[in-house]
Length: 308
Image 1 (tube, rainbow, N blue to C red):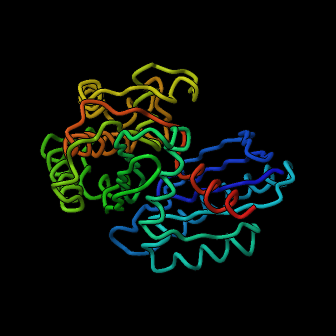
Image 2: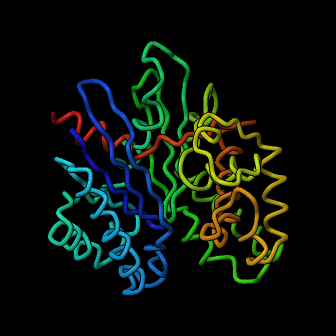
């Protein structure tokens, strides 16, 4: 049977169509569009009409693909922007009524759990390496610690690439003072969310979502983007610091032309790199492994496959 998962996030709206045959799962379609649903939510507390319009336009295109593949079940998971906005429930209703997508507005802890499930799905459950998953989104960053598939700690924080860009980056290119304020903000948010005794002893760190995959693509100058080369790429702290320094010195239009970086991610990649580095510093990490498997796969496993 074919199934579909749509992830309506604060920065992107993504689609996964997969074929399920017993324990076998085959990816058929994967799409990403930068829709910036979370634009303005941090200050106004509501989803803007133009942002909703971008999401609905994207869902029009995704609906056609879902129908073309004869999906027997289709769900939508909605994260930070929708759960934080006063009118988020209105969008969730439209997603269900107009597009026939089973809507799931995820609490932060559920988002973190599904992200961990997706990122670690390919790891043998007998592997006792303590694993951290870092998911930097548009409105929030999820941090999840676990071993052998069992979660010991999870938290969803108010640090995200859209949120922190809007708060701090106003010059083009951003000034050193703006970058320092952003780093201080992210550092404070992440530090306040993770008890000190949990920050050491991480044997494996996996970073998912657009910031990490973009940095992996930039590091390899991937034109066009190649998911197979991004999956499993080891991103060092030193390499991340170098790319942040280079990206932060560029005006926005120059960043749009960086090989490996999708032009629509150029406005938020600087904030994303800062947040990733602050997370690495918090957990004393020298490197992270980048993964294409994230909440889309977690939702597929937990919400769809578990119900079969």
